[in-house]
Length: 410
Ligand code: GLC
Image (cartoon, rainbow, N blue to C red; front, side, top):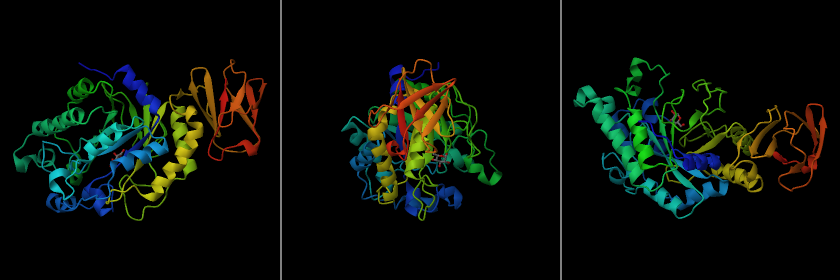
């Protein structure tokens, strides 16, 4: 049996268009690496000592959720367990978890779920790594005498908990299974001991959480039961990262991306994308029917890095005026140019002008039905002239938004 998300859940997920990814865990304590355990070849006992120090005393779930809301992000996706196998919630299936293994003792997923439930503008989605560098049945079956089925029981059991104990979930976001990646012998700790039995896992989620979207960051064609196709660090089909598939399915899409070069907080991070670049990625994603899931990696103390907060705030400010051209829209039908992309809601088309190269914006492929043009921000009329198969819009620079000038075409 292959179930899928409810229509209501799927359209709500697409309408959201902008979300906050949050990478947090023991890796944040060292702040040196996204894949600390693997990258520095740290043994399980040594890594456990790092995990035991996790103590984000300044973590305030309401604050995280309100930073997301201020940015105009409609959902959060939080790392319930990353590749290091450490659970940031009170799982009954392991002691390697924040509530017993650390001085902090609090269930971060519970606090985030409660904070989201206290307001109705941000929903909670849950990231879960199927790859596990700590669990003996994933990695140390020979030594432990455990079988792959023991790991499957653990994985499916954790998903069951996450879908049962934290109220309504916006999405289940899986990671760590990359079928096209070839891992050398010394990276054997990446290789699963068998099938993840996704059919069963996905049916379980769709049964427990009928409105939750399933996304699996496999860098491959989506499997039956997956509701959204995801792309990592790239717009759909672009694959500058090298590991994405260029195949684009007919499913709704999601792009996930970092603000700098890291998922977790790494000291000395550089290469922050500008607010303008981030708004560009958001609207380019929306223009091809994709949500944009933008990552923050909080400090070990539990605070979101100020540079991240200020970027998010800038995006939020732009969205407060221009959100109508993003939320609830679907992929645009006006062909993109180097300068423009479009989104659409019914018969209203939103032309996003992302660069200011001349007073005129020349677009082809504008539907014949379009009669008028207005700036979304001010509702001022924009001069629209049809010349054969092109439409010429004249927008003086004083009326331009430095990030993205949106023209509403009707
Ligand atoms: C990649 C990284 C992983 C990160 C994820 C987020 O899969 O390996 O660490 O959590 O991307 O999309």
